[in-house]
Length: 101
Image (cartoon, rainbow, N blue to C red; front, side):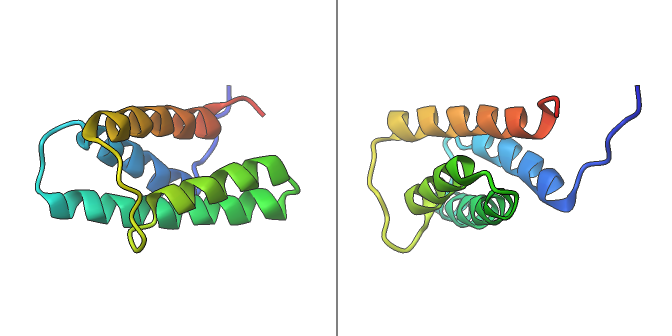
C-alpha cells in the first residue's frame, strides 16, 4: 500500500488535534485563546478547500466551526461543554484526514 503524503493543512490539523486534546487539562486561559484562534484559522482553510472542491455541506460545517471558535465575539459555554466539543472536533479532524478516498 502506497503511503499518501499529508498536505500542510493536514499536518497543521493533526497538531491542532493534539492541542484540542490538551484543552482537557487545566491550563492557563491564554492557551485556550490561542487554540480558539488556531482552530478558527484552520477551519477557515478547510472551509475554503471544501468550497473549492464543490463540497458545500462540508464547507458550511467548517464555517460553523469558525464561528464557534473565533476568539473575537466569544461564545460562552461551560468547561464540560467545551471539552465535549474539543473531543468531537478532534475526532472529526482525524476522520477527515485519514478516511479512504
